[in-house]
Amino acid sequence: MIFLDTSAIYALADRGDSNHGQALEAFRRLWEDNEDVLVHSYVLVEAAALLQRRLGLDSALQFLQESRQFHVHWVSSGDHEKAVGLLEERGKRGLSLVDCASFNIMRDYQVSQALTFDTDFEQEGFVIYRGHGM
Image 1 (tube, rainbow, N blue to C red):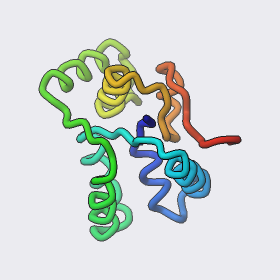
Image 2: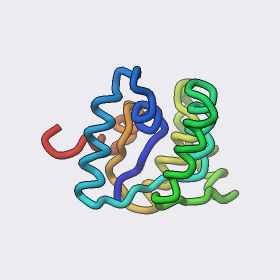
Image 3: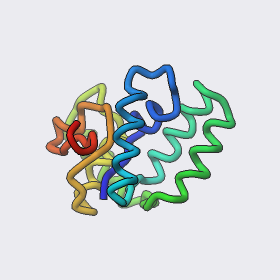
Image 4: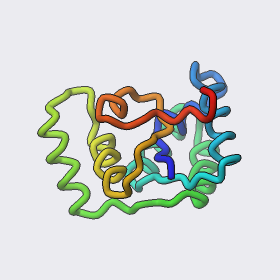
């Protein structure tokens, strides 16, 4: 199972994004390897809002349709509180609540790899998934 972060979702959708080619290749390999994809509901909301704002409603709706193929963890009040606690503990202005929820949920699912372009995942001890040979 590989965690899918908003940064990779956006890079995949925006052909003009500097990481688009890498995201496309990594996602292709992910599907070829039949990897399950994990996201959580905060990522769905964050990614849909970003796509809608930057690329339009059609892009956001397409993503939301395609996200039905993913394993979606619906953030509970307990997950939220744990994420707030981690955000407070880390004390980094650039670290988001969504990222903190991602770190906790990845640990809960024992997922060690994330398809992301956000270096906070590496700093938190996770491996960045780029596909084989990348």
